[in-house]
Amino acid sequence: MIWETWKKGFDAWENATAKYLEGWLKSPLLLTPGGLMLGGAMKAKATYDKALSQWVGALGVATKRDQERTLHALNQIESRLLDLEERLDAARNHQQNGAA
Image 1: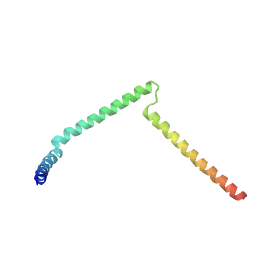
Image 2: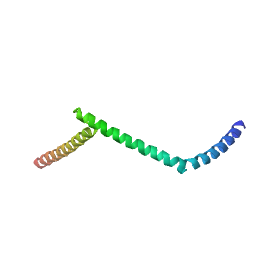
Image 3: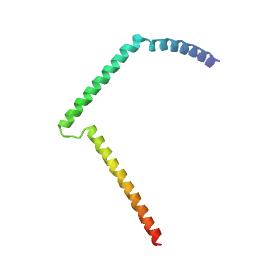
Image 4: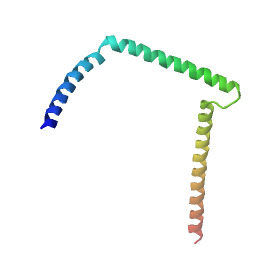
């Protein structure tokens, strides 16, 4: 009985609060400055990342972009090697089946 009363009270509070917060979260008074702050933070992060990448590159250390490019090339080489191995196995099987 106590639980049902508490649950009804909580549900009423949650519904009222949700309507109030939903109104505020859709408000341009909140969204506009929030969007501007997020945009500014993203620009600052991009500037920081670019500067850090240039600084690391100037030291002669591979940057994240360099590492990704190298990893991509290695993946391409691995893929070609696997294709060649499959062709070689198929040719060997064909030769063995033809000789038998």
